[in-house]
Structures are given as C-alpha cells and as structure tokens.
Image (cartoon, rainbow, N blue to C red; front, side, top):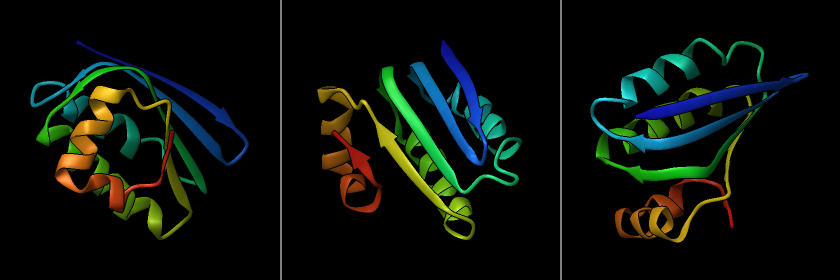
Length: 100
C-alpha cells in the first residue's frame, strides 16, 4: 500500500511518500506527481515513511526528475538506510539530489 500526502507552499511542493513504492503502486505516485507539477519550481519528496522502493518506483523518480529539470529542482529528504542502500546499488544516489 502507498500513502501520498501533498503540501503546497507557494511554488514549493512537498510530497510525503509512505509504504511501498512498487509495480502496483508506482502508477499512483506517477499520476499524483504529474497532476501536481504545474507552476512548481521546487519539489521535495519526503521518504521518512517509505519502507520499500522497486525498479518501477525508481523509474517514476527518474521520469519526475526529467520533468522538473526544465522548471526547477527536485530533492529527496528523510531517506532510510534501506532505501539509501537501494539508491547506492542502482547508482541513483549519484543522479538524484538526496539530503541525508
């Protein structure tokens, strides 16, 4: 199950993602993000409650990063050790702006 909570603060959008981001839930996050990026110049993904991310979830992050690059920046915060290991193993820690 995936939990997505959005908080808009001017042109900054904070998206809290909780639960599991996998093949069955990543389309939900992708849609939420696509519908919310208009007029946003800073996207913050809060992974404090994210338990698991699969390759499908990583693809959503990559697609979102490409979308936001044209209009602003994306940052990921509150990444657990488990999720960070996945980012490190896949090389995503070099691509994404992750605040530990």
